[in-house]
Length: 217
Image (cartoon, rainbow, N blue to C red; front, side, top):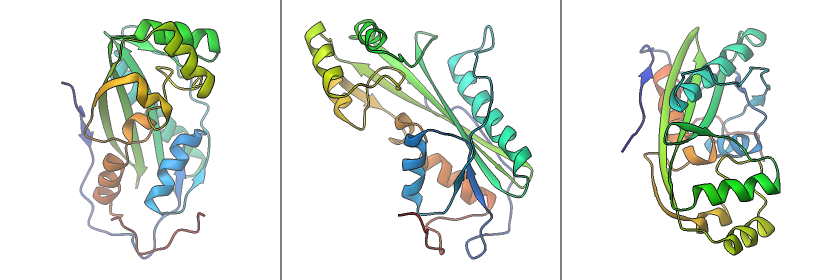
């Protein structure tokens, strides 16, 4: 089973708990913002304009890693004094990327295709801090149940997961479509691996839980 593939960071001695740097999430995803709020630290959002087209011959895992870093790097140029969090996820069926369906018909077709299949969801996260990229890729392996057309239609009637690669929200009713899930970080599948991100922040000098109370509701 595939797990997190690599990490890169220098060791820094300074800690930032009492005077933390400004934190920016380089994503317009409401799922990632909701996850980041769990850490009870303040952040702002800046959406990057990175082209997410895969590079020919690039594996889905490397696409996720490259795009997470590219988003963090792009936003860091506009916010040079901040720490930037970039993230990207690519679903992988036997080496072929699975995209967000975008519509009801595409979601039905995608779930029919994934019925009974094992899918790897590669979630890349990059923390750009102090001029360095701190990176991790976390892989979650999911096995879909054998899905009938009726099950698929009923699910999408109740939870139209058209903005999710794999067409199922594991944090919601989509969990009923799965027979198993294996991951070192359960938040990774939703879009932002908080265990990995917490470790990256700590290695960069910002330990959690933070001594500063978040102003987020």
